[in-house]
Length: 483
Image (tube, rainbow, N blue to C red):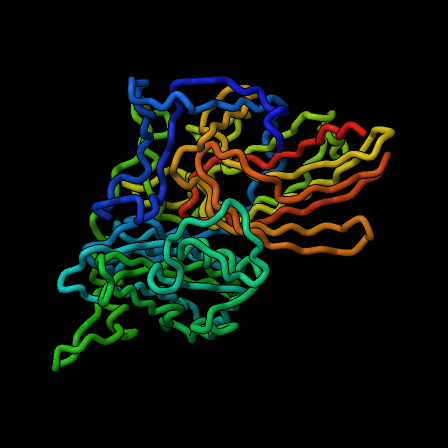
């Protein structure tokens, strides 16, 4: 988009509030876990601020996202994000007969649910391999089948290292990624499973079974930092319990590492404590002062936000006037509602007292957005659809960007576009985005609409781990070029 369509203001600095989530490791010299969920104010203006920085204000309408999250549970295991001492990460088991009752949230799962686990380790003792286990239990008297329509698990090294990418790349084959969580949700978006996951498992009555026994090794790495991100879609035909657990590799008599066994995971579940170190305690919902979101460890109420983006009370979305934009907030949260007044963060049905009150960032939440675009004018119009990361703020009717953007990635992940082209052929495109804070980016696509024509565009994605909300999905009608 040409800058003529923006209001450009010269500034000496940009006052903003940036909430940091999973900071890419390459940007952390010490690579040590900090409180990555604390609000960090931008430094005050100084004589060293480069005068070439320009703030770009995009006028137009900013709408809240219609619809709401569904009620499908998502088991969200993201605290502690950085693990030094083994233990229980998240347990939905009942607390009875457990050495640490407070570590068990007593939340049985039945039917469709999702599971997300995102954990790292650094500088482990003697560079021991850390294992992440996902344990399920059938408390009933009949066998239970758990289907896995899609599931993926990747390590940071060597599977999906954090890497800078161009702002937009074609990703038809899923080979573009910039982090393990980003790759995992991309795989699930395509309805695929990585090789360690079967299409289903059967859990016998009053029996345990492992869904995953995944290693995180730092051996051979220049810097002893690694992690694993796992995302599964699951469907159980009976009531089960599930837990995510962390354990350093046991050793054989000769001192060689081996994978933990099922009985060892059961023992950890029964006798273990919560893994440490614990993340910073979040600010209560009505709290004041510095806003600390906290990391998530609990079961969130809702996995999918599916909606048709239309004009209020209408079945279609009339494209804006030439040069104007309609934008919708995505993954808005308490400190970044973009003037919409809307908080999309999923509520947690159960959680630990020192972890997040909501799923701030909606990691691994599925956004399925359909735009039934209609051209009410008497001229053919070119419409651009864009996903971008404005500077976080809460001003009504204003989106703020800057050139150059702040050198910090805000959104990294794959989105899918499905639409009919001008020849009425069905098209599907996968695009990997790598956007910095406030970056002015190119559209995902442009579509030409004839006078009176209506055509739908579907944009869907799982909100990628290691992204930082909020974003906007915008529709802009381009200015006609002079003949």
